[in-house]
Length: 130
Image (cartoon, rainbow, N blue to C red; front, side, top):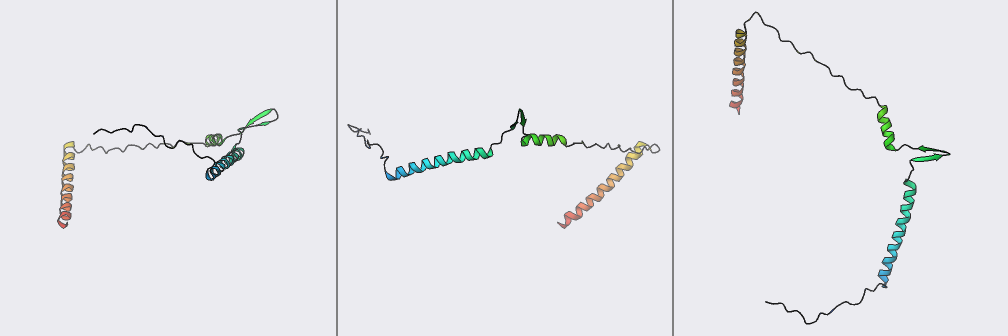
């Protein structure tokens, strides 16, 4: 399937836009008024907001401090003390010289097994309830 082109192209809308219509003239005037107002407002705001960082008094130029400079001065004026670390003495284990090491280990093992049995009994009681 071939698309056939028309033999001649016809240009539509050859006339330019009508810029003298009433609504176009009104909107253009409104844009100009808004633009003038914003320029005047910008000038007013800049005159109120702008504060020079230096003031000239006679022959001397005195620099005014900015908020950042004032904050730095305040931070430097505060004394900062580092907290002292407390060193805890290490607990000393009692020296058992009268009981041989093997006997001491056996008694610890028996104590562990006893507590292990008690833990198992407690677990059995709670699992039996659930």
